[in-house]
Length: 131
Image 1 (cartoon, rainbow, N blue to C red):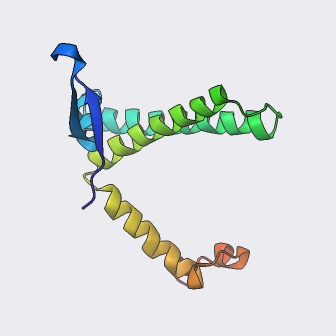
Image 2: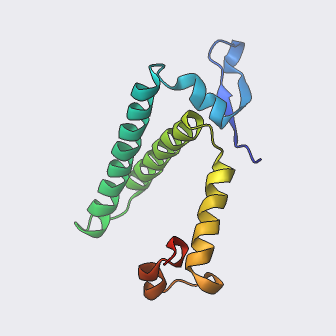
């Protein structure tokens, strides 16, 4: 199993020392505790909200012609980070690893796209879904 590790600034330590922690544990520490249903709802709404903010950045650049800048790119990165946080919260909530989800997706798409090449007909045919 692959784990993502991050360096966290420990404000309780002298000179703000940093510690290395697993990212899924970092998210687990920060998620608002609640009932299972409320946590699932919070995660789902948060994930879709952050995805919407990411999409809004793309819309402004490609549909409204707003030039890409260091500031707009920084905002895109921030939204992707927020998406990753909520995605990790969802993985934690459903007790599944990113590796498992990625492998399931690879298995599905490998059946759909023969020789790992995209085609519209394969996308429409969805061979992974059966007859």
